[in-house]
Structures are given as structure tokens and as C-alpha cells.
Image (tube, rainbow, N blue to C red; front, side, top):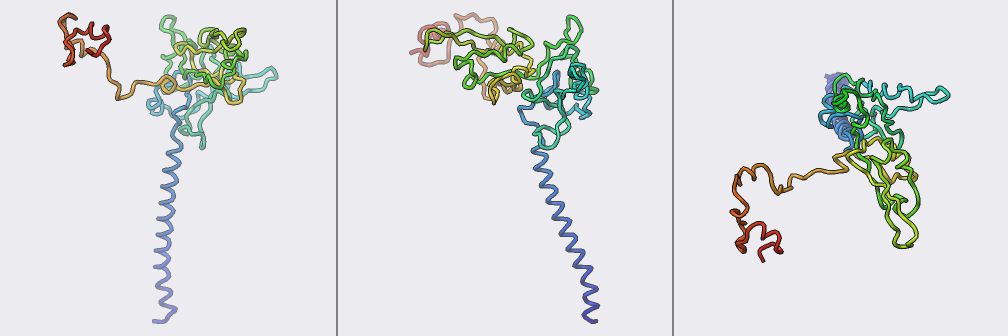
Length: 283
């Protein structure tokens, strides 16, 4: 068998192994790239969702990424300016690079806040219940109530807010649609000068809806007031938290009276009331 014939037999074999290695390499690279992309595509924990959104995990299970909420938001009548031009809507559908699960709705208050529409058009537009209309329906009137929105809660950075420097500023206060309810201006005397006062914005988290109109209005380059998801802004008890008293404790105690209960502190034979009120610790 000549060299030419050997080459003709070997070449297809080499091509097969070369192609296989090439495809394996591309496949491996694709897996790595997709893994990195998928990790990045997960929503940032600071992501702000539309009003009446379910908890994040349930929201992602229900949301079909149809974009109807964002469409309803941008098509609201208030989004047409006096010249007939359409302004951008509050809700955006996440795309690659947004650090939000792709195709899901979110908003950035500093760009376009939520204007708390009376009819809340984005919520009824949702076909799957990812935006739960019951969350924004007043049970007394059975009507939509924008005061029941809960997109997050505003937080004030007292170190960068100029009102805490002694400069008069009420931009966030005036921008709030729930004027003097969600944000109040608290008077504090300026002890340094003795002649001036601080008017400091204080958030009432029970009223604040997280619309972000205050963040949009803030005069500092980096807003000194900003909206965070409620669970981030207010936190929650960690798994290590030890409850002081719960229903099981009450069942264990039963109907016993205080004078019949003693502590387990070996250094003291005092009753609980004495233990707490007389410098404690049985010392």
C-alpha cells in the first residue's frame, strides 16, 4: 500500500477525532459560558418589582415574561405629555446585563419611579397572578387602592442627606404622593448654632409604598433617599434568634402563678419578678 493510499485512509480518521475534540471543546465552553451567564442573570436582591408582586420565589414561578404589565404601564394616559409624545413607562422588562432575571418586570426609581396610578393598570393586566390583585384591593370597598401598594420602603442616608447638614431641603417630602404620611419632616434644634433648626425627613415604613418618587426628586447626585425591598430595608429575625417567649412556653407554664415560678439560676432563689427588678442576675 502506497503512501498516498495510507494518507487517504488516515485523513478521515484524523478528521473524525479532530472534529470530535472541536465539538467537545465548544460544548464545554458553552456550558461554562451559560453557567456564568445564568448566575449573572439571577435577580439582584435589591430588585424592585411591580406593585402587588408575590414573594420573589413565587413571583418567578408565576411570571411568564409576557410583558403585559409593562405595556399597560407605558400606555397609561398620564404617559402622554402635552405635545402628544409618549413618555417611558415605569416598568422595564429585564434584558441581558440588567442583573435581573431576563424577561421579568422591574423598575429603577431614579430613572422612572412608580406614579401610583389610581387604577393600577399593571396589576389587572397580569394573566397569571404573579401580580396578585388581592394585595391592592381594599376589602372594605372591594376597589383597587394605590395606598396598599408595597414595592419596597424608602431609606434615608443621614450622612449624605443635606437636610441633616442643616441645609433646608424638602424635595423628597414634597414629591411624596402621601404627603406628611409616608414622609414627615421632624424638627430638631441645631445645638451648634443655637439659632437654626434641622428639618429631617423620617420615613413611616407602615405607610410608604416604595414608589420611589422621593428618590427621583432627591437633589444629591447619588440619592440620599432610596427605595429598597422591604425585607432588605427592615430585615428579619435570623435563624439564630432565640425567642423570649412563645406559645409552647405558655403551655408549659400552664395556669401556675408567678409566685410559684422560680428561675434555674443556681446562684439565686429569687422569684422572677425580684430577679428582673432588683439588679438582676441574682448577685
